[in-house]
Length: 286
Image 1 (cartoon, rainbow, N blue to C red):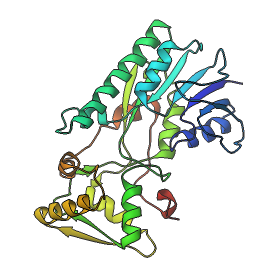
Image 2: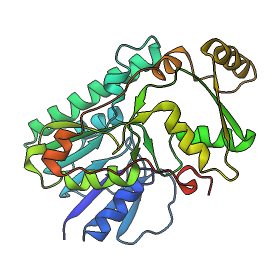
Image 3: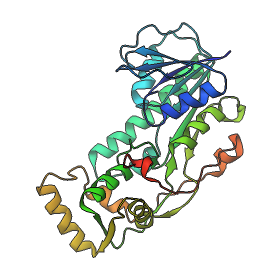
């Protein structure tokens, strides 16, 4: 029986990955800062990337579903022997590289450093590493985009967007991302590679939001405002302490197409994500 060590196993991608590994016959040890409910086939270890306790001396695969930069530092100093590493990053490595927001540029830089660190350490240890870059993640109620939109719209029964929020998006379901992490394990073509993981459908930002609002009970109304009116509304929201982390850079991206090529992932490990069909339980509203 093969054995895996999973960081971020209690998170929105990590949990379905644990289920997937167990169903495929793997023995799993997962690290969490907080006590977790029992999960078949999973042994929970207390700690995090800075203070994990009781780690095994050797495993067949290590998965990281948490912050990539912190995992890269842990991996560089770790004594755990492992021939295979799969780590999640984000397409923000490209999207936010030249952002007007300094915090977003810093995030992109940390992602780049994390990817380079994981690949470098793996090469030094004669291990094979694969990096996965999801697009807009949804499906477990833990994301900071669609789940937040659903919460606001559910409270006020309405949501506003600028009319020009037509930039294209490819929302990726957590279940498909977990399957992708498992699929790359035995795919030799993925060694030393990084892959974008878009969802199975490309649609305009405002259409994506409209589908989320339509599944609420009762459905929420989407108001499309002139850009200047939306900016004024956003300023009022900021003054009231709402959505203060939603700034000009995020607003500008609503007009930008954030589309990534699915073909490399499809070719190398059969990635076949679902279309965007939201349901209430995917956003903590069911």
